[in-house]
Image 1 (cartoon, rainbow, N blue to C red):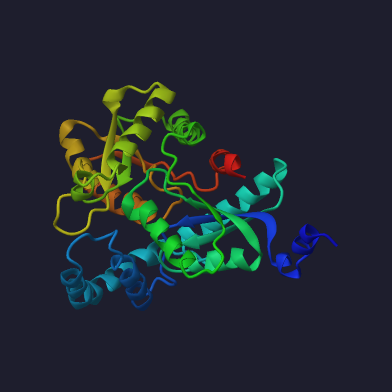
Image 2 (image 1 turned 90 degrees about the vertical axis):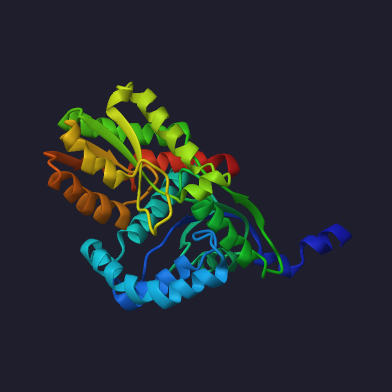
Length: 339
């Protein structure tokens, strides 16, 4: 027996195979729409230094002394309005996206690929997802955070979580980390398709609002490219559909705390529209790959009420891309060059 064959025939090598694992990640949800579950979820989420960039000790005192005593009950009520029999819409949709991505890759002749899901906060955790791939002996892992527009608070935080887990592994796999896809042609096509379907059915509104999740302005000042990437996504979709730029607006939602966030604010914009003669709007949120609390409750309910109570007449929400076939095709085009 040659030295080479002795090495390659080592029985320990059977633990590893040529499969590639794709870890599809999203933000996450509490385990249940209850104050207790929200307290656990928010403690993890708001303890992330990528989320809140103020002196650590001061923030932890505020978080545990005030916020976690008040916010869980309010947030639990909001989650209860969107919860389904299958659980969190975000998590069930992410699982559906991963399953359809796996099926599409197989249909397109891509074999030896394992697709699993994980959440940055809550369950299934990033660690659980990576361990699931390790147990299958996978030697190459592609991390696919479902955040089209990179932000340090989302994609950057996901990288931190992955690195923290792999730092404990004796054998680190080959790793490919996708840090965004805000101008991927197939992603722009899928957004454009979803908007066109709405416009074909309902007509062009007075304003078409692209509402992205907000971040503190401080992040932009310190070099986070998220704001620019959101503007690019809007511009590319507008160009794709040849829309009148005067009837399209980019805004930012979901601000928290008293600091200045990216502007214009979605709720303030909607409140002002009717006084400007804008009474018929359509709104979408391209930053969310799956419908969740921020779309199903904040946009569909809270912001609708803001607009209608201010004198608006017609308000419609264009759903997130979720597991649309063209969206799954975009994700496949994103990962295939790495397989």
